[in-house]
Amino acid sequence: MIISTKLIPRGFSAFCLWPFIFVRPEFRSDTALIEHELVHYREQAWITPVWVILYLVSRKFRLAAEVRAYTRQIEVGGVTREQAAHALMSYRLGISYGKAMQELA
Image (tube, rainbow, N blue to C red; front, side):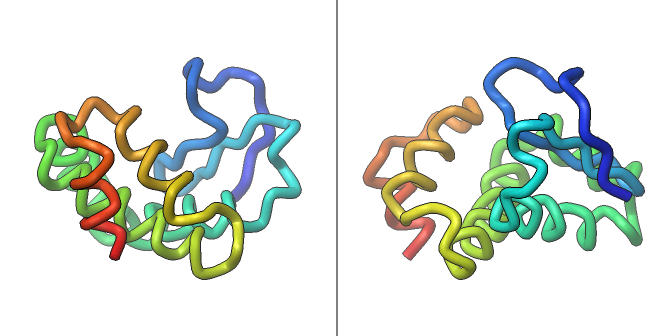
């Protein structure tokens, strides 16, 4: 279920906490962003508590999850690889732009 709300942490356009996808109203029609969140939705569906804990405490897990989601967003034309690399750097993963580009290759 997709919920349009302004109650999303600053710096984010959307986030998923299964079984919901929360999207800022101005991004509700951004299909590529929804595709990004659907990757997280599918991953969380079978192990939500474990997935959320790993996402919050493990940079490696969070990086892999975001790379999968941004790869999908790139595939549907929502962002470029360069834009996704910049976005990855905002997740406090301790990676450089070069490393982000490498992960998205």
